[in-house]
View 1 (cartoon, rainbow, N blue to C red):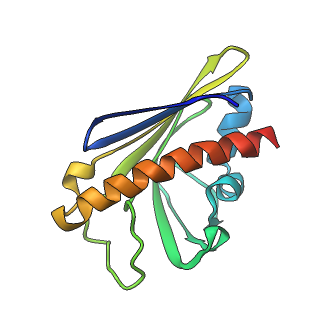
View 2: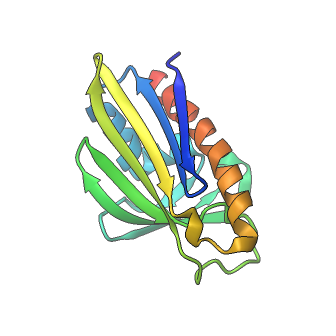
View 3: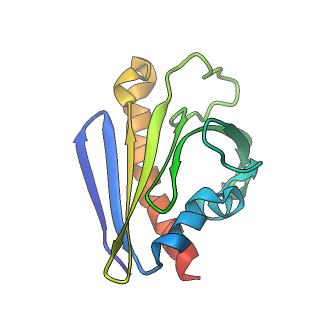
Length: 157
């Protein structure tokens, strides 16, 4: 198993890095094909990822069918960078998060040792409303540890 490193430089930024045994082309497909992304992330997404587009879905695959995610795709630079914006830890199905700022999630791929060094950075927590900020940061910090392990297992399978 490849080690995961975590770096939180501030309460505004979460960073996780892992060395994966798969080549960048395979990691890229797992990240940017919305069906594959959904398999390891635990979501059922409607439609493909496209720069500038929004993809929605539910988290039923990870046991939360009443929760939805809404990903605004920012950047898709093949085999290098994939990023989107979303509402972090938006778990109250009755809450309206649409007026809140979104955090930015960036995946960066670098060829390394016959595989890929994958770094995930989520930033922008300082803009989240004060009453949600600390919990969103805490839960997403834990969440990215789990998701990095999920993609590692998915690619190894």
